[in-house]
Image (cartoon, rainbow, N blue to C red; front, side, top):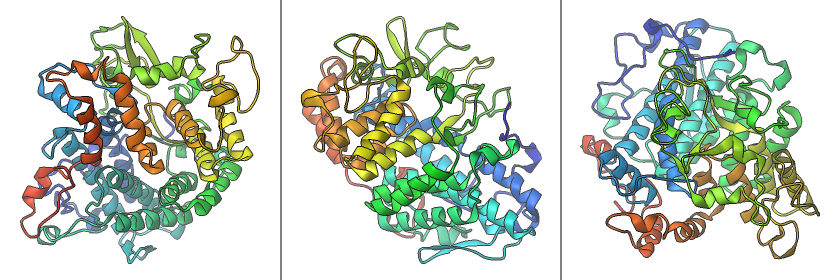
Length: 523
């Protein structure tokens, strides 16, 4: 049963489909305004529930822009001539253009939910200026504790969206309040550093506004809502991105030592629909089955193509197809023993590998119960190891994660027939200062598989082009050479340098006729 879900009376949802000309338009969409609806705690809380709900839609395309553009997954139909498959192939080979419909969809629905978060924040009197997010008076009437709680949750969600946008698109449009149509046409792209200033300010405010409540003390009905631990975890990841490791470590130590979150003993149990929002989950996007329009699409989207009802009702689309490069990492070459995480993450049907991490019984197509994890405790442990670099402590943190997976530890001896070792525990491949970051990235790759983390990890650590070029080389003959027309390996590698970022959608550029908006390189 969902402790906190996104079910809202339809009459209270005022953030419906837009009729505005500009994607980033924040103009109210009906005669229901912030001032005459967001009047008290109950009304603002209902509106905030709509903002949580709005986190679902971008996930429908986020995997395409992250996992499919990394070494995690590939398009299973390289020779298909359908527009949908061609667009997926273009993302998989960094040939996307500014008219790409899935890029537009992600941009649109992310900005749509940012707008919804801004409505809530405006009613609470939250403003942003000169690198500072501040609490003012606002129009909604409630006590200070209630206001801080709601503001902290909305600020986290806004920061989460902007953080994803800036990593995928580079400099973006920063909008934190309501604008008139004429004002919107004069908004330029902010620089990447200025985008990070807003994200940092919002997350710092969220950590201050939200109570530091231990997981065990949270009320059942509040499980699934944003907490200070979620804000601190995401802020720590931002600090790692910015090279501010000391600040990241302080936050990560706080989360590890005081949040009450911990690893579960079973990796598979983390994702079970019978164990949602468990102590390993620091923040998750919630879904609800039952024909409410709030179900998870991933079960049908990721199940093997033409599997009928063997895997999930309504057949599978076979998308987010795991790479052979990834699948091989789960198996010990010397023995064939598999990492325990494999059986919870991927499976095979008629020789087709598919993602099973988010599978659950589905009565209606695209209506699964599974939540989608955004921040887990294992992620935090591995982030701390990254911040520390190669030390005994960081190796110990990796060992915590590997021990739960049934993998061997660094350093040590063991019996391959008894335990699976993702990497040899001794010899030329043992973990060292020189290969530490690669071992850590591989651990994160396996542990957080298909949670849309890998591309961002490669960006953050500066290993994007190196590891992606290695991946294209490893799978070129078996997969990419089959494209018609074939894409030369050198061109695949070149595309990584030419178009590492996604394009600003052309529809956005075309509707702005007041100022010139620069496009990203390569488009």
